[in-house]
Amino acid sequence: MIMGISVATFTQLHVLISLTGIATGIVVVSAMLKSHYARIWTATFLFTTIATSVTGFMFRSKFGPPHAIGVISLVVLAVAVTALYGLKLQGRWRWVYVVSAALALYLNIFVAVVQTFQKVEFFHALAPTQAEPPFAIAQGLLLVAFIALGVLAARRFHPTLDGRLSGQVTHRGST
Image 1 (cartoon, rainbow, N blue to C red):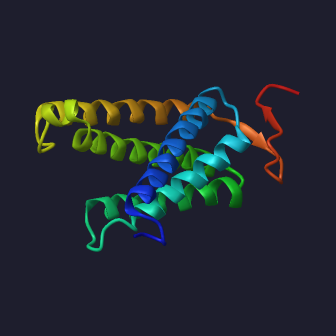
Image 2: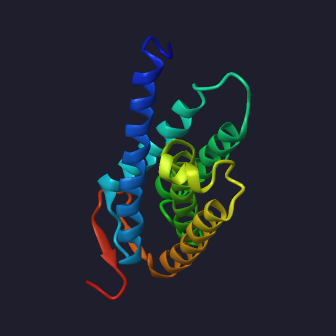
């Protein structure tokens, strides 16, 4: 039992939270590529991605690779939350936010790929120890894609937010 519920139910909840974080993160990064600030999607992405890391700590008693990814993710998310809500994307904090948000999404998808190769029979057969080329290729392509997305988003995301982060966005060059 974890937090008074069965491990199976807790696992399903954790996966649902994680998939919500991934889906909303994709929406957020897509919006960044168009220089849009998607207020509700962003808040949902940050909350569910934090919740994914926090609930992930509850599965093992020994500190292992999943915990290391969780710690890194929480640090990255703290930077993203600070840059967005605390420092309102001022100056360099705009690109710091974009990079940290994209990195948090990457880490969430990285873990999803690991889990897919561990738990889905078709993928597990391709890379049973995760040291085989199909796993390395999948993770390599994911990394390259996120580096490209992060750079592109950092170049394109230039919203001007009001002091309350109300979602009212004025884009450069607009009135």
